[in-house]
Image (cartoon, rainbow, N blue to C red; front, side):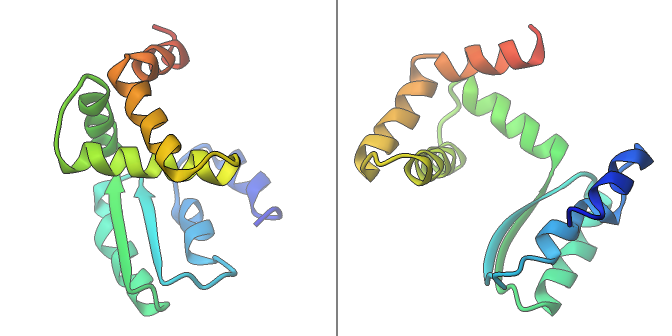
Length: 126
């Protein structure tokens, strides 16, 4: 992948090269979450993932994900919010020695206290 990256970055448009990392995972994972930059690519990517042996996956496009993230950061409730908490807890847990319960509590607190949306706005330049 490191050899493809310079060419991919020089093109300045999104192409199938954006998916190579997910499709070329050396660990041959059976489950994965994949972002799709355009809804037109969702079905082809789902078909390819199935063909390479991935049996459980979630594919979403950037616009959908941005709307979902924005809603959750603003306090929306439901299953998607719970999934964000679990993903955040997993990321914290993998990068620290903090126990699962504490990482889950940290992820809930970051959204409920508005800390997450503050950082999000700062990153966007708002």
